Length: 245
Image 1: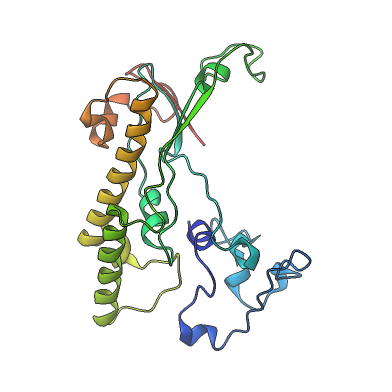
Image 2 (image 1 turned 60 degrees about the vertical axis):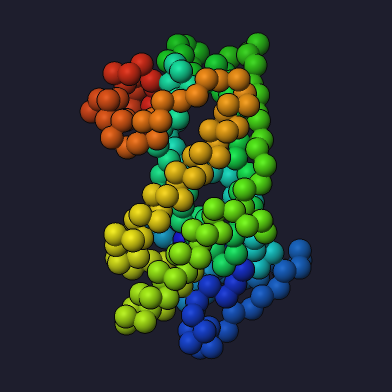
């Protein structure tokens, strides 16, 4: 998550007091990818970890990758429902909008037909995509970027919340890093919930353009998807197929 947020921002990603003590070379030419050996870097800004043990080069350490295009599937799972209903969207969607240094362009999309090409219930040969199927993609208007949209208002509220937290003695944090209060505090959770709802609403408008009927409003709630049953993957009690990605 830290890396995705930084790819939507521009360095430096650390508070000024930290960047003064760390020499960060920025070269956005195609000949120089900004770092020769990220594993031997003197600080953690050029690497990231998925579990606190492994180490990978940080994509955001490359200056030429600032303000990148990040394509996400906001449900966070493979989800194939007979009525083409979406699950609730994950909080990480809101973090990608609220935390970058500028509001990213937000292009809602609706993709249909993949479930016919590679359905989770397909039989042997399971590894082969099914031919002769139709796949279509619809694109909505940009609801972020420079325009004054609901996401700009939510970002203003987020910045005010972060500033209030700092005035109360909270630490100046790096871009893409949150402490417990900004992760789990009541106001922070409410802002992420609202931001995620607005993203889902934007995608639903594109879904409607594809010709599908309106969803049940309850489909966007976490509680609704408890009806899937206790299984994490496979065919659920509501007839959908789910798989972790």
